[in-house]
Image 1: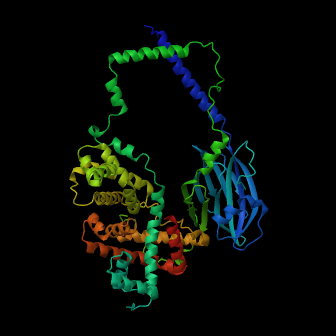
Image 2: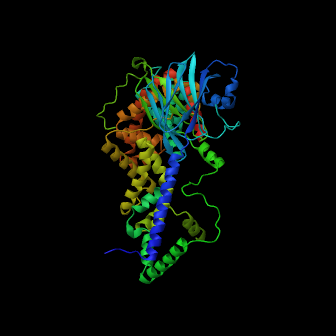
Image 3: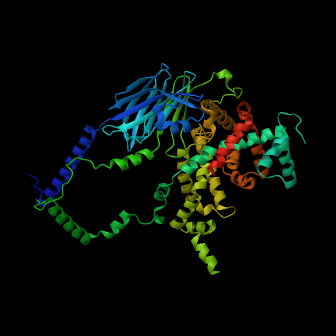
Length: 167
Length: 203
Length: 209
């Protein structure tokens, strides 16, 4: 016996199939279109002795002074910009011989899941960070002071706004 | 009354100080202890230590309590209350409402709606996004949402000799700092005379 | 009389709401939950030192209280009875878990501590560890007493009621607990310079008020 749908049933079935196809394509588009992320890292040396302000750090000088109140001198040693895409890790060699590694592990609502590792120190952190918000790693001894990594995630394709805090 | 030992209080003196801290001494005794705390180094030191201990116990509780949100609390409780006490749920009300005549009427309305939705339309429609495109927020609003969200640390592993501390401010716009510090050698650690907690301890 | 009735209906006392709950009034129970949830949450935070567990405890305690509401005869304040249920539930939970999964012991975010740089942060962490050990070695009665007093601000009488022991026992337990905790922290206080730490800790807490 062949089953024949009445017209109303066919209409509903058509609606349902159309909805499923649209949703599937939407998900596919979203996955294929995931653009990746810019990771900007400034490697800063902080010392307790006061020194002339580093112009490269002008935009975050205030935040550094507040977050690292025991330190008076800040100097940018290196600036890195890497693309975080898919789950390919990126590595940044640091002046103290350490190596910082970042791996993007997906998105949770507005937050990017990142695995941050320091290889020689055998430290791994899993964190979730929003874009355009500075966060820091600090404490490794170097050159009479400590190293601070100022980290910042920015979406691809957007020029950095000059008035935003970005290393 | 001075302590016999200039460095520490006797047991009785400590107990007296404990009562003083709790406001449980009679006024004349409290005044006496207050004078000792002001003038005697051992009393002053012990009093400060007790105050610091209390503050250390309180501070994180205060911080977590202030950040607590009870959004889903009542909903979670209500679901587990006896059914007789609960307000009728939407499903209960719907079941009471849906009787055969109503069902027939609803089915007819649904059929009419489906017909209207699926027939070819000749009227011009506003330009709609292509199928599959997700709606996006404007960049400004997305940025505003993102910037106010804090960095969340989900896990920390330290297999080497580093101590990892995370400093996060109370204000959402403050800076998160992940400190990696050299842990000192065990023999130089203050307090190393405290016996290690046993894994068999109930807590 | 009319004014009193109006005030009663706006903000009825616990006893009145409890009677309504005993008769099945769900809205009255919701009022009680909203009135006491912060306090119960703080008790659970102090006992368990784990924010996730503390939130679970709040819900469980209110479910238990609702189930046992007929047992409450008004001999003590409802709030005190709630705290007692909370403390007992937390103790049961710790006994079942056999470990104290304390996510925090002390607050690394004392305002002013950062001014001393990472060395003091490390010391802060070491103090926290010493305090955690000392708390775990106290035993649950002494630990409960010190938490209820220091963290939740209960009086000796209230603690006695919650713990089901005489007031003198409460005083003795507090004294013992403080002695042990002070002993654990003494090396750090001596090293740091008690004046600086006391000043900073006081500033940090005062600024939060």
